[in-house]
Length: 193
Ligand code: AMP
Image (cartoon, rainbow, N blue to C red; front, side, top):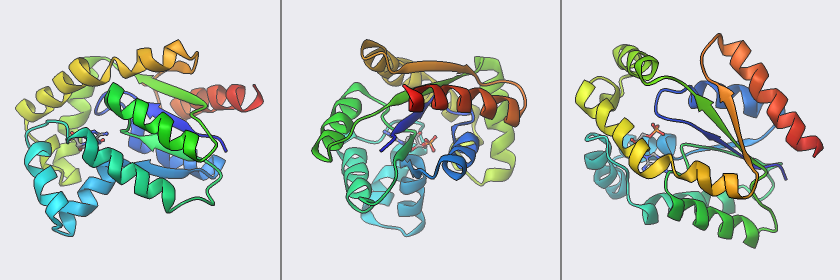
């Protein structure tokens, strides 16, 4: 299996690049944000609880997202590998993910982080809010909270993978294809390693 984490702040392009990566490498896309939004659309109790936090730009509790990822891994045992997008967002989630993958006899091969300036992030998210229908993209206060959550809880997850020499950084500004090519270079280096 080849298991990849696509990392970066909200608005760094993880969703866009994930679509291209899964198509090229045949990985199963696991986005906790997408799973949560589908729970909200189906109006499940989990979705309704999560929505209150998501609308404020706050993270959903670790146990909730870890449970979702655990079920998704179980439901896709035949996958060639996973692309984790928007997960792990805390060190506790990273530790739980290691355990889940270990139980399946596999591990994370690489974390690729998209580097984008804060000014560009704000611009992209406000723009996305005009068309995405995502309530957490249309309000500047909520966007600021999401970036603050990223800085205080998520950015440290990079250090966790740096310790294991699994962290790689790619410039997240430029054309979609330029960024994708830079990501592919890193992926292929790790696949050959
Ligand atoms: P995203 O689509 O990845 O930007 O996620 C949208 C929102 O869902 C985030 O602002 C969080 O409220 C919640 N969320 C998604 N993934 C996670 C995660 N791994 N841990 C905690 N909350 C999450």
